[in-house]
Amino acid sequence: MVERTLAIIKPDAVNKRVIGDVIRRYEAAGLNPIAIKMMHLSESIAEGFYAVHRARPFFHDLTTFMSSGPSVVLVLEGENAIQANRELMGATDPQKAEAGTIRAAHGASIEANAVHGSDSPETANFEIGYFFPSMDLQAGH
Ligand code: IDP
Ligand code: MG
Image (cartoon, rainbow, N blue to C red; front, side):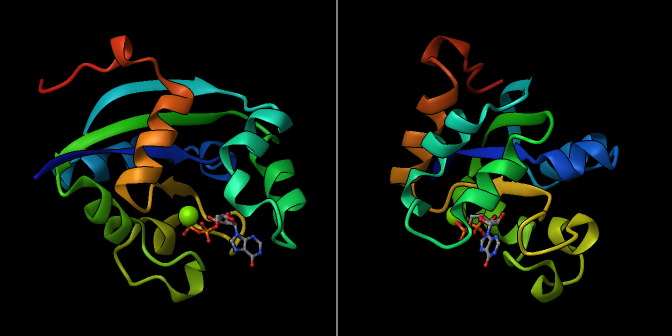
């Protein structure tokens, strides 16, 4: 089934100059960008995005990190895009991520782990709508 997922190239990866490498990996895996923008998330935008994690001990550090510099926010479309992107990203902790994954290649720590990817159809729907109005999605190119 063709799906859409929300991806973020996080501030650590932008800072490492690997935007191009990450997007190359998406395209090579059949995950086509249908919307893309660079933005410096404010702390409150980061808090709203990660609201499901607000009770976690790392929440404040996470929203501080996510608002520490610009990110690249994308909608990816492809066959089983949500799961496919999770596999391409690798485990949350880069030290546990399989070789060949984006986090194994570019993640520095469990927090600064290079990329975000939606984890279910429900979260993908929320996350895509959080950043992009539907008129900005260039579907099926
Ligand atoms: P995911 O990004 O692999 O879906 P989540 O559990 O949804 O992982 O956590 C969201 C983000 O919060 C992670 O990508 C990472 O940046 C950060 N994070 C997760 N667990 C920890 C932790 O134990 N310490 C610090 N940051 C964490
Ligand atoms: Mg998650």
